[in-house]
Length: 292
Image (cartoon, rainbow, N blue to C red):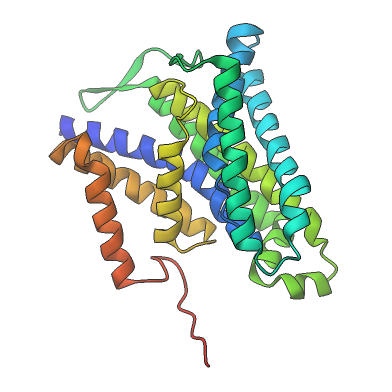
């Protein structure tokens, strides 16, 4: 029983962190058909901004989190205004933006390296102590991550389902030409989506670094897993991405317990490949038939 609680707590924590970063990727792909390869760098940048605000400026944790999310959102807006928007009319937009965001990610990672150095740093945003559940002490930090992730996911669900901006995002993702005919300002939607994605990446970076510490390259592994989750869920499927993130987080925790950390990602990828052979359009994606 104790082992089951430990694995469950670890899996839910992993899934919550993955869900926050994956939803941003799914939103961007759904609205723009754009794979944002700078997502991992945005994640790391958000973690370092939180560190700087708390450790250097001495400001409280809530302000540090808000500052990091604001910086992430502004970076997302800058990616749209100065990189994505000039390329939108190009027939090769998806390829061009893929390459461009790889470059942006490299620049951001180099900037973090120059500003903070290559040495690992501890994220000051931590919550000591634990809560006893079925005889197992679950760290309060894990519980905090779960609570913040749940609140953020609920907020995104409310935004997409109950607000005009969210309805515009959903309409654009379903059919951008029809959305334009209905008077929706597509450019504004694209900007909002990339800002939201950047803010979520920053929040995810804070969560991950609060457990594993800060490194300039810390975004690479979460970004890879976020892409895997997006593919498993069905590219652009936001609710599916959240569910798939929780499922894969739990699976990863179980595999780590049974086979060890070194085999977890390889076995997880094998399971993902099996799922995609079974459902090439993703667990929650829809089959599309193209007649030639």
